[in-house]
Amino acid sequence: MRLQFQVSAVLAFASLTGCVSQPEPSSNPAWESLFDGQTLNGWTVKIAGQQLGEDAENIFRVENGQLVVSYDAYDAFSGEFGHLFYNEPLSDYRLRVTYAFQESQVPGGPNWAFMNSGVMVHAQAPETLRVDQPFPISVEAQLLGRSDITPTRTTANMCSPGTHVVIDGALTKQHCVNSQTAARSAGEWAVFELEVRGGDLISLSIDGEEAFRLTDPVYDTSDPDVQALGLSGPVTQGHIALQAESHAVTFKDIELLRLDAASR
Image 1 (cartoon, rainbow, N blue to C red):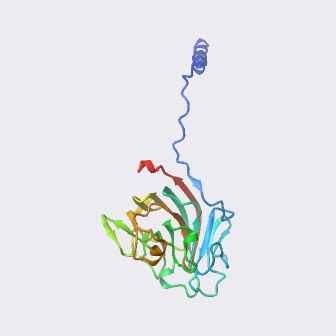
Image 2: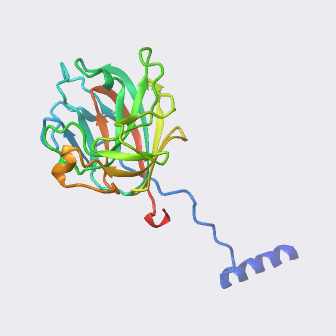
Image 3: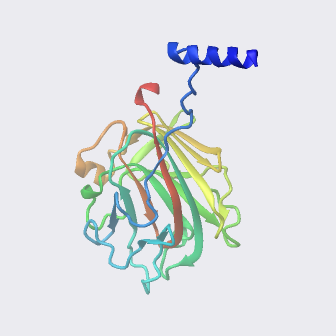
C-alpha cells in the first residue's frame, strides 16, 4: 500500500512539474488522397480533338470507388488520346497509385498502345495544350501490361514527349527506354510509386522495388510544342496526369506525399 502511495505521489508531482514523458509524435508521413472515390474533383480532363474539360464519351469516370479509363462507348479509335491532370503543379513529392489493366482495347487502337498507360510527370499545364495535341510535354512514367502476345514486357519504363532525361550519367534522347521490371497481367493490381525531386531526380517503383531512376530532365528544344511555348532548360515542376491511350485501365488509391524541397 505504501509503495502504491509513493508511486502515485511521484506521478502527481511529475505531472505538475511537466516531467512526465509525452508520447512521441507519429513518424508516419502525411499521405493525402487525391481521389475521393466518388468524383473527379481536383482533376481536369483533356482529350485530343476536344476542348479542355470535355470528355464526350466519358473515357475517364468513377465506378465502384475506382477511377476507370475505358473506351467502351467508342465504336472505333480515332486518336482520342486522353489525360487527366491533377490541378495543382508540383515539384517535390511522392505519388502512390494502384492500377490494373483490363482486357479490352477499343477497335482501331494502335498496336503499341495495347495495355499501355502511364503517369505524366512535370507535365505542361492542361490549358496550354493544343486542341489536337495527343500528349503533353512531360516525362512519362510508362505503365505496360503483359499478355500471351506480350509475355516479355516491362513496366515503369520512361518515355519523353518534349523532354530529355539523364540515365546512368548520360543525356538520353531516345524517346522510350525500358526498365527491367516485369509487367503485370490483366486484372493484376500493382502499386506504382514515384519520387520526384524537382529537376534533380525521378524514381519509379513497382510494389516497393525501384524499377528506374532518372535525373536532370530538360526540355527538348527541337520539339514543336516546346518551341511554341518558348520553353528551354531544366524541367523542375509541373502537373501529374493519368493517361488514356485506347486500352482500358483502372486506378485506385491515388495518394500524394509532399516533400521538403530543402531536403534535396
